[in-house]
Length: 107
Length: 121
Image 1 (cartoon, rainbow over the protein chains, first blue to last red):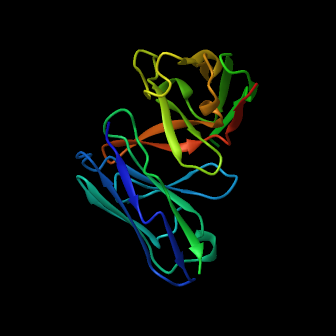
Image 2: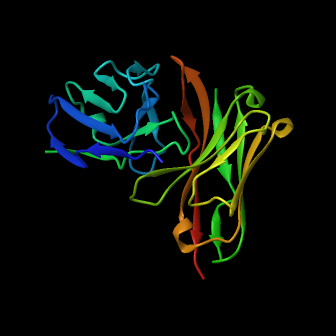
């Protein structure tokens, strides 16, 4: 199975900061990588698909990059609504594994 | 508007069974791949199972293979997860998701609100 490793597991940041979350796969997944945001008590919400494509309705301060085994989610100009957990998922090979998650907390 | 509504969660006995359902609306259900995911409260996400539109292709995570069965009824716009031989570690929130194709890849664009399954004697 492909293992997805996210880092950091948590990050403390302030409104207006730039936050970068990385996701590394143990095998090449090309660009079959999605990023999700999850708030407490809610279902995950799709942010980025195909590594760098912004889902409709998602603010442009979210961006994704990478390919192969290394991927990045960047949140520019962090807003109060962005304090949440973030997960990457590869959908290249079954099982479609998730990263362990990154919690973005208020500093 | 796309909507996925899970039901069937609740208390299950170790070694027992539960059947989850996911009612889909707002899209042509019969043409979409579907998945089940789960999340232990306070922990990370786990992909569980996948089914193709015609039910001719299914996949399972090793953690549920041989115990859980995914199925669908396109006439009823419904997805199911039959959960047998329940274990304590199956306690989680279960989500159904819809897969779509974009930029040459597949990904889950809609998730239900989830249904909580608790396995305990």
